[in-house]
Image (cartoon, rainbow, N blue to C red):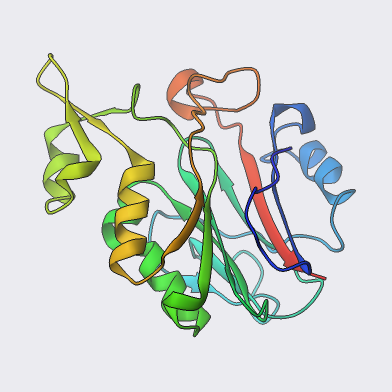
Length: 216
């Protein structure tokens, strides 16, 4: 498992699963994860959008790509396999959140929607960027470049005329524009690190990791 290296308050717990714990899209994988948690995670039906759920008030499997949690022992969760999980906490540890942020979600504003749903001042929020596909291998087309117009620093043109997208740079830029200054994590590559991570782009399977966060 990967545990965030960030100066979050002591009552915050968070982790991202790795291949060793199993496929979180399977019942067996979820049973293994449950051994490490205070309660069953509140899973989402993710659609690369900007909707935010509020467990435990949210219905089972709501259509959402982020979860905001204010109740101790309630576990917010997203699934990932190249898209980026992003954890959030306000400096007083009254609220935590997790977002599922691929390029579509980032373009649509899922990080901004999550921050707004937390209800805390962005200057009082810490964020951690979890395992995602790295910029050296994440080739995208002109459609993605156009969809992310205004974020040129997140792209590197390659010699084939396509684009290499840096999800970490894009997420940092969007968070900073929204007022978040304490941003940690990054530097992973789910595609290249086959020993630790599942990657949809590498294997084209439905295997997933989970990113979970809760308050004690």
